[in-house]
Length: 69
Image (cartoon, rainbow, N blue to C red):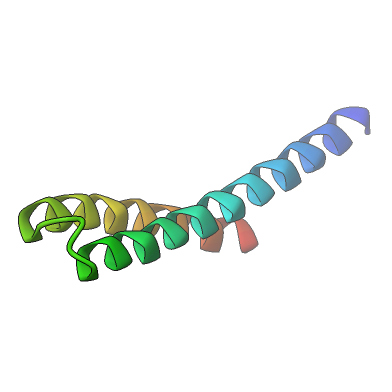
Protein backbone atom coordinates (compact mmCIF):
# COMPACT_ATOMS: atom_id res chain seq x y z
CA UNK A 1 0.00 0.00 0.00
CA UNK A 2 2.85 2.38 0.85
CA UNK A 3 4.39 1.99 -2.61
CA UNK A 4 1.08 2.74 -4.34
CA UNK A 5 0.64 5.93 -2.30
CA UNK A 6 4.17 7.00 -3.22
CA UNK A 7 3.48 6.41 -6.90
CA UNK A 8 0.26 8.43 -6.72
CA UNK A 9 2.10 11.30 -5.05
CA UNK A 10 4.85 11.14 -7.68
CA UNK A 11 2.22 11.22 -10.42
CA UNK A 12 0.59 14.30 -8.88
CA UNK A 13 3.94 16.05 -8.60
CA UNK A 14 4.78 15.18 -12.21
CA UNK A 15 1.39 16.41 -13.44
CA UNK A 16 1.72 19.64 -11.49
CA UNK A 17 5.21 20.29 -12.86
CA UNK A 18 4.11 19.60 -16.43
CA UNK A 19 1.18 22.00 -16.04
CA UNK A 20 3.53 24.68 -14.73
CA UNK A 21 5.96 24.04 -17.59
CA UNK A 22 3.12 24.38 -20.11
CA UNK A 23 2.00 27.68 -18.59
CA UNK A 24 5.59 28.97 -18.65
CA UNK A 25 6.08 27.91 -22.27
CA UNK A 26 2.83 29.62 -23.24
CA UNK A 27 3.93 32.78 -21.48
CA UNK A 28 7.27 32.59 -23.28
CA UNK A 29 5.37 32.49 -26.58
CA UNK A 30 3.50 35.63 -25.56
CA UNK A 31 6.74 37.47 -24.76
CA UNK A 32 8.34 36.32 -27.99
CA UNK A 33 5.38 37.75 -29.92
CA UNK A 34 5.68 41.00 -28.01
CA UNK A 35 9.43 41.25 -28.64
CA UNK A 36 8.88 40.62 -32.33
CA UNK A 37 6.05 43.14 -32.64
CA UNK A 38 8.12 45.83 -30.95
CA UNK A 39 11.16 45.19 -33.15
CA UNK A 40 13.47 43.64 -30.57
CA UNK A 41 13.56 40.40 -32.57
CA UNK A 42 13.97 40.35 -36.33
CA UNK A 43 11.78 38.04 -38.42
CA UNK A 44 14.37 35.28 -38.84
CA UNK A 45 15.32 35.11 -35.17
CA UNK A 46 11.70 35.28 -34.06
CA UNK A 47 10.62 32.51 -36.42
CA UNK A 48 13.41 30.21 -35.26
CA UNK A 49 12.69 30.69 -31.56
CA UNK A 50 8.91 30.71 -32.00
CA UNK A 51 9.04 27.39 -33.89
CA UNK A 52 11.00 25.82 -31.04
CA UNK A 53 8.59 27.27 -28.50
CA UNK A 54 5.60 25.89 -30.44
CA UNK A 55 7.16 22.42 -30.50
CA UNK A 56 7.76 22.54 -26.76
CA UNK A 57 4.17 23.65 -26.16
CA UNK A 58 2.89 20.80 -28.36
CA UNK A 59 4.91 18.20 -26.44
CA UNK A 60 3.87 19.57 -23.06
CA UNK A 61 0.23 19.70 -24.15
CA UNK A 62 0.34 16.02 -25.12
CA UNK A 63 1.95 15.14 -21.79
CA UNK A 64 -0.64 17.10 -19.80
CA UNK A 65 -3.54 15.55 -21.73
CA UNK A 66 -2.09 12.05 -21.30
CA UNK A 67 -1.67 12.49 -17.56
CA UNK A 68 -5.27 13.64 -17.14
CA UNK A 69 -6.64 10.35 -18.46
